[in-house]
Amino acid sequence: MRRPSLPSRRALLLCGLALVSGLAHAASITDCTVSVTGVVFGTYTPLAPTALLANGAVNIACTGITGNNGVTVDLTTGVSGIYLPARTLTSGALALNYNLYLDAGYSQVWGNGSGGSGEGSVTIKRRSPNATLTIYGAIAARQDPAPGNYSDTIIVSVNY
Image (tube, rainbow, N blue to C red; front, top):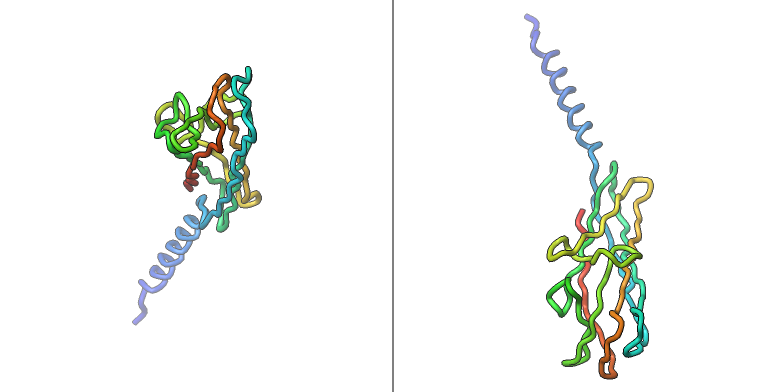
C-alpha cells in the first residue's frame, strides 16, 4: 500500500525551510565594536567672547550585517547629571560649563533622548559596515574659571 502523505510531508518541510531562509534575510547585526576619540578642548581663555570649540568622534565597526540597520548612539550626562543647560567639566571643586552636540551648528545637545537631548543615529549596511559620528564640543564663552586641568567622563552606548 502506498503512503500518499509522504510527498505532502516533504512539501511541508520545504515550505518551512523557505520560511526560515526568508527570515534570515531580515536586517540584523551580529556585533559592533566602538572606539571613541575624546573631545580635547586645549587651553580655555577666561572671559573670551566666543565659545571654545573642539571635535571628537564615535567610530563604529559592525559584523554579521544583513540589510539596513538603524543604530543609535547615546552619551551620558557626565558629572553634572544633566544635559541642559550644560554639562560640567571639573577640576576638584571647580567647574566649567560645556556641552556636546550632534550638529556643527551646536543646536542639538547629544544625550540619550531625555532631558531635552537628542540621540545620535546612523544606518549600518552590509556594504558599508563602518560609520563615524562627529561629536561637536563647546565650552561656553565668558566664563572666569580658576586655572587648572578640567575634565569630565562621558560613557558612550551604541544600541543595535
